[in-house]
Image (cartoon, rainbow, N blue to C red):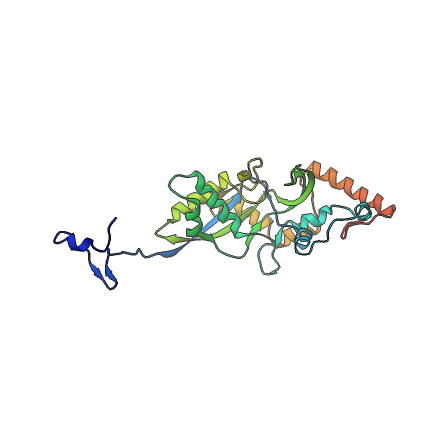
Length: 279
């Protein structure tokens, strides 16, 4: 290790240059700039939306405590239609082209995770050198109501029924900011493409191990499939899909049909009905 006395013994012509703070090495700082990459992506597998419900957020903010036996007997645990609507980030701006949104961190996280499997890049480094612009990314496509059996994160892995919005065919536009020359547009594009194949976005994505939802690929803005999703799955159509839910598959349809009949039966017996339920 070298110290401040090295200049005294250095050969003629190889002395370090003097600086205002004493002896030291010359330092050359590379000029860095921001680059912008616009990417158009289309889903190759359905996208499951996973926004935390209003009920869950309010319970975190102001817990009600344990329910009594009477409360459990006179209230219903789930309200599928309300949970379906709550599972999506919705854009309140009427001028926005879509009603459904995704957090930009969904795609940034996917790109960072993809870096773990590729040689020559590190997840933390990609996190510092890239980000996706915007507070919310507009997602095109028609949402449907999807009910599935999930397991809670408790010790017993308790099973439950969870209702979310799923978009079978979806697309969106991303604006990715990256730091030049530390990472090139080609490298960012390659990472995004890898993220679409090996990570995904939304719930039950490939990254989690068991699911394969939320996968995507990069396409041209003139791609026929991309243009069709944009035309058919914009704001007005999405709002209608939330107002009048359509079931995603037969299992969901059967389960929701039984639920609605059971709500009516319990209401007739004097049991409480969740807000917004049809009786």
